[in-house]
Each structure stands twice: as C-alpha cells, then as structure tokens.
Image (cartoon, rainbow, N blue to C red; front, top):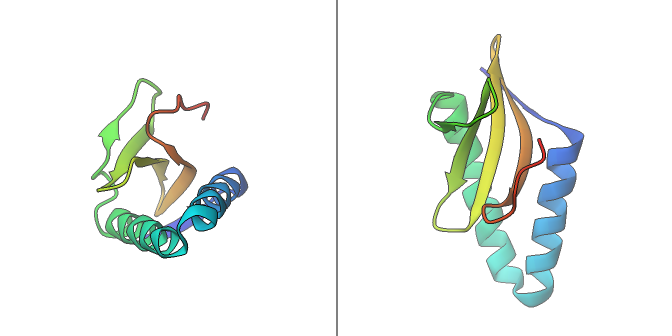
Length: 92
C-alpha cells in the first residue's frame, strides 16, 4: 500500500501547522506526529476511517486533536484528499 498526499491536502496541513506553530510550537509538533501516525494507520488498515456521504470517500479523526483526514482507497494506494479541522465542512 502506498500513500499519496494531494497538493490541496498538503497545503491544508501546512496551514494547520503554521497556525498552531504561532501559538504553540510544541503543539504543532504533536499534531504533526498524530497526523503522521494516522496516515501510518491508514497504510496498514486503509478502511479504518468511517464512510462519508460522498461515494468512495472516507474520514479518519486524528485523536485527540480536532482534525480529520479525508481520503480514498484505490488500487494499492491511499489518496489523502484533505486534512482539516473536524468542525469545518469539507469541500472535498
């Protein structure tokens, strides 16, 4: 299984980490570690996330933080579509 981080998802993650880093650099590192751990989990268990209303799109919460990863599973890869605050409505 391979992981593909789309450009929009990478940009979202960068914005999240930049915002947190201004307030709490250590907090930004912790969030990044949890996001990376969640993506590692998806490589091992691609269907770990819950289904969404959008066909083929799944969502995994990044606990204990209020972020969610939206993704698709396709032939041998997990495609990360977005990483955003879970209270925000997804546009992916």
